[in-house]
Image (tube, rainbow, N blue to C red):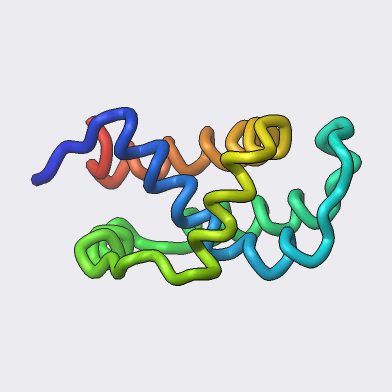
Length: 110
């Protein structure tokens, strides 16, 4: 069983989140405000969390082993989160705990 470092976990979480978030975040950028002020971000985070919670460990392992290079859209989302530290922080604070728990249960992180 492969073990992943903390940095790999963070990169994986961001990558998955970015796959889902690009269409919503790109067209509806908002000013920095408290987390409850970001309904689109909340919806994207809920989708990302649901993807992990509704997936079996076997499905998550398969998805990890079949990882394709990021698309241009995914790269744009990564850049968006790199450029907006507050939005990135809000998003990670929402998705990281449930995703980390699922990944730990599945042996994807030590």
